[in-house]
Image (cartoon, rainbow, N blue to C red; front, top):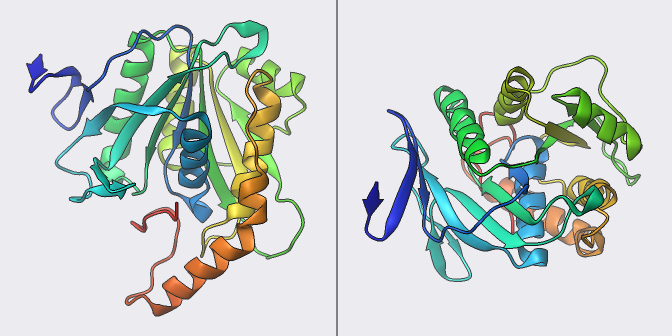
Length: 265
């Protein structure tokens, strides 16, 4: 279906996927970053978008999403967006593009399953070879050491890839939100999905945790140079600025599942 020069490529009663600037996608890597604990997903997603100079090619639309526009570099954007660019990115040069699906707002619980279905449908339609979701997991303590990053793979191939790159795998536990639903659906559909979970404090944006996630991604994607240094160098500045903003905010909100606080970009 066409609307105003755009193409609706998926539509259910709850959500639509609209392509604004379609590109040919071949065995792409898709990164999915939504704001959960420490806003790790949103921070990493936006760092990758800027470093790789990805362009917006589409968005997800739903009446249940936050009624807002996200202004980036003076341009208003939909809450849930799709960015892409041509990059050789994976082992064996199989991956031809990097795609990022991201938002600064946590989808309401009733929309997580329909959103995951839409992401799976769009990715399958475009023959995506691998999906990586970006998450935080709660840390009880604050320290200056590198945060731990663990991972879960939806398929045997995904778990073998994690082992190959020496990424610690979760043996027991739970993964919630969009990442958890995508992992489950990926397991059922035999779709290669990896969730990277970085240790992070729940009550403020964790730039160090995001930087640590970038380091792991960089190791998994040897043909792309993802530099975590800007996040490390500005970590204290970013975290201090946002802590101050949160202290001044009324009412105060926890940054994690269930919160609708925008990420600091």
